[in-house]
Image (cartoon, rainbow, N blue to C red; front, side, top):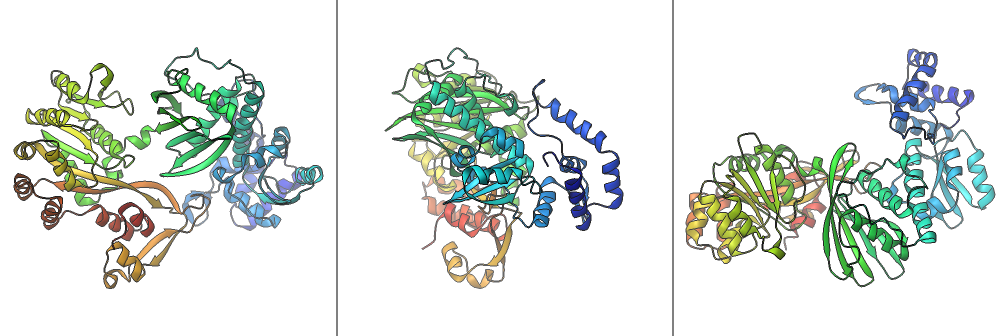
Length: 601
């Protein structure tokens, strides 16, 4: 707590002792070594801040307790955290505890009612305004000066809620920093946007390093990227509207409104992003693509930039490729046991063609990169042909196609065959020439991985036939097809069980009598998942093995339905069946199964 005095300190320790969260011995140790703990923690915080800058908050007793990682009584896997402490302090104070969700805040309310220095001094922030009622989150409910001051100079009816100091500090830094940068840019906007820095690798400053001496637009863009990282966003949309610019984040596959910017600032922000991505800032009539390499928590992050002229200006989408998400262990992708074993057998094949299929955003790139990573060793030459390179990985030899100068998937593949490859990844098979080149590479002893845009695994075979490949070539090379989708996972913190209704079973194609006593789960919504009931995503897969019976069906140019029926008799499960299995295991919800696989009428 900010400026905690002896009385407040005594209350905090009394509350924690009364709740059996701290023992008498632990309290005595904290009090006798408080100065040592504070100096140690201050040194740690200073090492993460820019030398010479003042920290915006002091080291409180609660910070010290949080840093000591005391085990919770009766639960040896959890620790006494700042959030748990503040919940107990809120109960003691007769106030509600609020886990602040940045995505639900109105930036005008957060930044427009009290000045930043006041918010920092009293460690509080406005979070909601309804009529004349203002909700203010504070990390020090035992100190009333800050709340009373807001009530006095605004005239609002104040409802105080308790939040953690770290959450309040983050909101102050991110919202005031972004808003002040945007406002300053709007007032002082000139043609002084930094267009000289054409470095591809951009090192973001820490939030504490951003200050008013930097260009305001540069600050606004960096605050935006930091905010996207902290919210686990996969995409940032910057969309021009008639009167303003809208910023949205895609999190777990769903878009959320984040900020609104004045229209003049939109142009400057777009120019800054295009400059960092080495794009032509003067060209506003044609779509452009670029990339930025930056870092998060000391790890490199790839940003893919795409611009598109729309009705009210130029829209930019920034795709965030986090290596921790893009390259995973195969076991963590979401395969069921049989499908995981089949997939591993496909990528262990000495040669042949493996196809991964699904719509844009279904996780195909993650599956392919993860497969290549599992195969990567000093014995293999792994080469990829991509459009463009999604994420640079030094274990692979990666090349990007450039159709404007005649470098296509097919022509690149012919060149790569002279580079002594063992494993080849072709970003996408779009036409007969690419398909034929991939087949020829597989015939000559290479393992080729590629993608197709089809709805399911059996349809991929028909797609190859439609491209003009003869059945005997497909049968000679194709080892397997994987179709996939992504479903959101149930939040483990607020999961609740229930039984499927008869109507829900009918919609999912289940027999009610067989599952009516099976519990499934949904998320009630909590602070951890921002009230959505979901946290993270996992893959849903159907894996088609090319057996002898299926090869015969390909020879006869059988329909996808006929191929699916043959595969089903050999243990093949569909995307829907895989999604339902995950639902029955408690990993996802009935709503996600229906959203991703549709309703059976």
